[in-house]
Image (cartoon, rainbow over all chains, first blue to last red; front, side, top):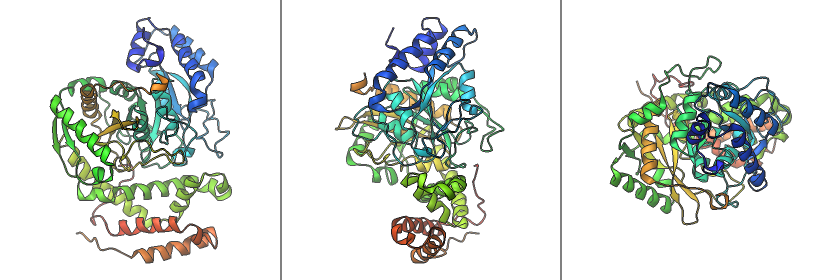
Length: 449
Length: 62
């Protein structure tokens, strides 16, 4: 049997269901790996070893085993966990212990998952860097805000972790750490019991090492929740079946002109073109598409909405405890308090326009494709990097996925990002899995392999 | 009907933000946070210069 830390969710759950892998042995192996590397990587806030082993024993005694049978999962420390601190890595929530689990956490448990622990986030899932380190090179940022979740998955501490995305907080760190990051359609997964950044943008994200694993976690968590006003009543398909039905060579729309390529380094531009050529030579139909004019305002709209809604959530704490906030979050809140109400509403109206136009563009192909980030992870621990390639999609609410596509000259991961029309995750996952197989990469950070 | 006429200039937006910031956060804030206020003014003007079609309602929960 392969080393436990190398197992995917899919492989591990299959081994558990067939009785070849005991959940306690698997959990212990991952806990040992955390013990070995946590000092280097600083991915975790809270690990309750006894609770993990107790849950694993319980899983061993259950006859009905779900899609996540016996698989340990990390949670960004903004997801409510009953009886376990949820600090958002902030001084404001430092002692907060929720009385209930977030809906998505409940659904993961119902699918057989074991909660391994709470992973480091940037403060309140915003922009002040966390102490987590990139396992590919500790001098480079791991990105954020789902920094601990991404680092834990990339370094083999767990096969899957939850993140969230308001700007680029799932797909950017996925790219920087050489793993798969899925941001589903806005409303696909409930945010009930998730500390908010911005209600009309926040989306639960999935961090894993394969596209199939992303489909499994999405299956476990997707679906309407009356407790979340943004939750969609859209039917939930069988994503693995849909991925299979869309498993042939995809039709891809390469966004080569304008925004994405203009902002990329020459290395990233060349890398994306080479990857697109490779996909075309393997059978994908790749056509170049242009972004709609309405896209130009999308990044500004995302910042306005995020800052204003973030300020609305924090206003009460901020009035008396402003000094307890990190400098970047503090600046976001202050800007949000100053943006006129009319500007916020105009931004929400503009958002509707570019969402409509991007949906029409995405419906022309199985997936739009572009570089995942303008450059590999910066050699700077005082930043979480550039979210410019994620924020417009988050603002539009369209689903996106990042897969690793190779290494930069400096030995850091590069990724490509796919986007699809709303609630077309099955098509998106099918295209991404086909590309993942066509690229044929097995990327693991050398120091943690 | 479509009316995409911009409402005000960068300087007007910055002046307005400066007055609000001084009132809310105290005198001196605008001087020490000039970059933040300029960025906010850019957002406001960019949005004002890209006004949606008159019939478009906000998105919120999409």
